[in-house]
Length: 576
Image (cartoon, rainbow, N blue to C red; front, side):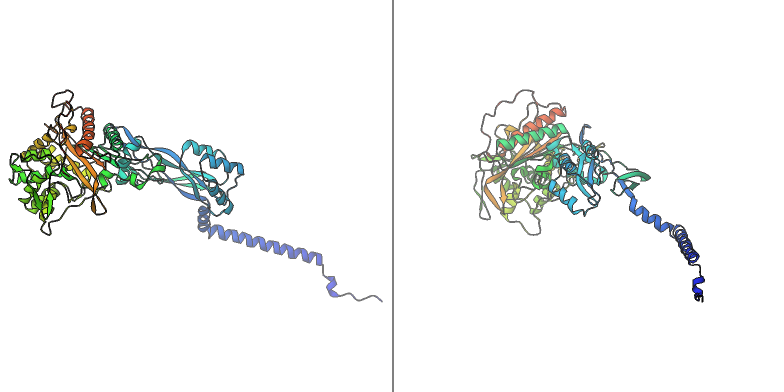
């Protein structure tokens, strides 16, 4: 008897399996084609965008920063090609030997680099900025995966430390952060370009795509500064600081006719091309930013107000030996007794007693007016950053006799050396106060009338006496030129009180005195050799700076061209 067979056994399982598999494959193929169609048609823009986000980048093309030029066209600051070395630590593959090559070639801290490679957290980190082009090429020649370069510029200052504070510096982003570099940032910077590039997984540029915008270079800026005069001023300040063991010194040289700043120097300074020794103190442009009590350099400005109001004449006589007590304070002169002297002689010998006597006959407003109109108590507007306004007493309340008396000889007020130099353009320009600039001027400018021509010439004649025998500054004279100027010696203000043995010694003057063209102001901070009178400390520095400046500018002499005889009488000790 045959066994019965199940009806299911009649099914051809082999063919069924084949058909099922083919159906599944066909379904998957249809799904895949459908998915591709959907992505290519309906999600095309999204996918292109996502792809671009991963490989396509907008890339800055750095703009060339404008050059700084001196008045003669000499280069003072230029931008040279450099590069930034960048590390993608996540993608980096670096052998120990390559690590050593990077550490020595850049250089970069080995511990820092090894930590980055070990942690692998950073996709973009600067290993070194503003690397010289040849160093960057050597690093890229190592072909290290994850290390790339980015073009940029590095600023180079041809004048080094002698112009460091006035020119300032740029940071690693090529942006001005000090001095002229900062105040003229918008002029010098230019506009970076933009382009699209393709980058690989290691963030290296593999292809340039579209140019969005060409870089627009910054504008070159021609300054009024003369690098020859600047070097001369810096050298003399350095020598004076060493000779008198001073804390420092500053000098300002102006073209009295145009208000152009020909030189502005401070010592000590720093090397802007190697900023390892740069400190906030050294970077400060002290002739512009720091205020000090000017002392007797204010007397000519004060006396011009008295002459204008008709209170005195150059020949008006006063007893300089008379004891003068104001508000319980004794006013005295340091030099030997002079007896009855004229106003002109009071300027020549720097008499505090005579100035205080004259101030007693003047309204507060007259003194305040001449000082403020001469530029004190407000920024001088030179175009340099950090200009101090100084401190000027207000007239909201009546001044005490001692306040009025001391203001007459430059105490109770603080000014910058730049303000002081500008104020003396009054006497150089027959009563006109000139606007200052660090840019070279191509057109004439008009000054502001502060005092009359007659008064300015009378004061200038008094200032010539200062540099003659019997004055406080015969050491300020220059062979072949008539010189007019004024000394100032004042105690330093430390923590709100005057230091008994610490001084500022300053001198401001002009030449040729017959028709002044140059104003020079010098200040020596805290000479400590025992000699501190401005006639001994600042006046000789002024003389050498002025002599060189007149020679560089080829100004004709207005006096006998012969060696000056030695000073026969002791320099008059100035009242402090």
